Image (tube, rainbow, N blue to C red; front, side, top):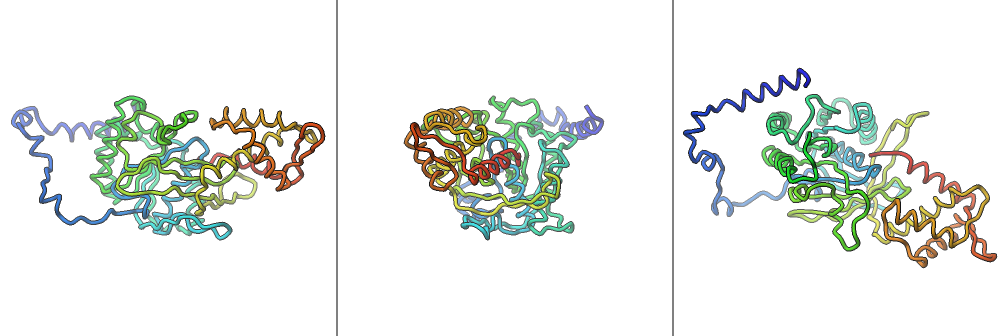
Length: 399
């Protein structure tokens, strides 16, 4: 244990041990009396409408999870949202080069970002690129972020969370983002009922401070059974989902710098699925982001996503063949079906579904179709470049 951790534990112990055993013995009914009971008189009072930090998306107070597989850009899209809130500018402005999707007005507020995953340099690079793209400058004091903090952030530690609540209050933080859940719960097993303590602590923090909390998390491995809820992808014990006001699944469109954000649980208000395009540029000669931001885009229907997925897999398989070689239609189908069902965990395409997308690629002149004997296929020059470009993009990890 580090000296700073020991010192914090000592201070917290002194504060919580102030009530003596004698005082406890006199406290018959103290719990009941301490609770703030309400009645019909309170229930019937006029109430303010829900307060949104991000209109129609994130209310305060609330407890939320955004989750998706590695490389789905879940951390990046939330970092973009965080920057927009620190500036009070719309989240997902219209793309000047594409069809507009949903744009979400924000209210300028203090934002705290606790990074337990990416490290200081990577987090610095992200907020540098996103901040510059959105027009932030060094005089803005609404963003507070920390990477791999010491003492370690542990949402299962009641005393630490009580002290952390004071920091949230003192800095008037209205949006708190935790990256990520699995690294923020100490020795707690996320697959067991003990997660109820963690979620209670987060919920208490949100309610006491009037803060919107968004936790980044991961889905279960593999797909879900056909007919199951999409929310069944959320990893961990059922007490996690039960405590949430909203859960949003981030689905990266295969081979593209674009995502779909799909609600899998919402309380009190309705959220429609929406899409986002990622635009960025690198510093010369490096993979460090120079500027980066997301633009709105129309949400692709599941059928559209699946059609594009099949096209991408077909291009990938042909790209991996030896230059100049051809593949028969049947052999190509077997390889495509294996990838879709195996590594991607999607439903196996029917032969008609597969042939339809193969025909589309041929009409786009990305695929060369030979009709001698068994149909034989290869990439055209433009198809080769397109497949190579998509392969390079898939290789980058934007969290």
